[in-house]
Length: 342
Image 1 (tube, helix red, strand yellow):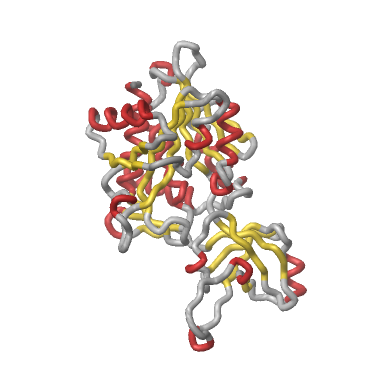
Image 2 (tube, helix red, strand yellow):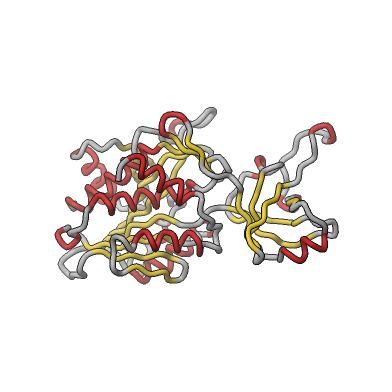
């Protein structure tokens, strides 16, 4: 898979519907892609699972995961004047809400609207929109709105991916669709012959990570891996941020080191990157990771777990940004690890 194909894949994945709790569309897209590589692909409990290699007690089993879902909103009611009242799904930045375009995924289809805001001429002061102040204008009267919309309709930001300068992409759902793309590229680059690898492995694209790693919990219980790799995003350095808490875009995959992770695995991935001249960065955390790895490490009797993170700017906003080279380095590291073992 070359750079152009990878870029197209990232955009395809990121522009597919899939707010937490409503991931059917993105799950079906991912399952169809994985059927090109595995004969055992299934969607179960919202997760996409694909198995590789003949099961063997002599080989450790590896789980490689990225989450399907994206942050968004949920409709709670339709007001007397035809506006949709909404609440957040996931940790959204409400500073950015006013006048954002959105898509309401109703039973009648996808209908566009705009989050309400007062013009600056009519406002006094500058305040952040509170959770109980989120209203969406669907551009119709009350009767029509109540005919088309229902409480519980999911809502996503209408912010399709855009290619920026220098191989960078901006969009609303790069967290964690770029992680999914990295795993797909890694599997593609393996080129088959999975029984010759030192591991058997399962790819999982998990649901409801933004709601507390729920898909990871049930998926890992079923797979019961020896080793778990959570591929996600982390903070990329931007204006005004603390460099000690961020990675840098275009500097490679961020390998996690934390008390809750396997020190042996972290060192193994670092050695693998160094041996293969794959660019990488350290991501040091002082406790849990806030990723699916936190669920994997305490699954059943436990699993050695590690995080591989793609640096991302403007997390949980409609304008997240990644560099495609970081997706490539993450894929290369996964491929090298699966080929060479520890």
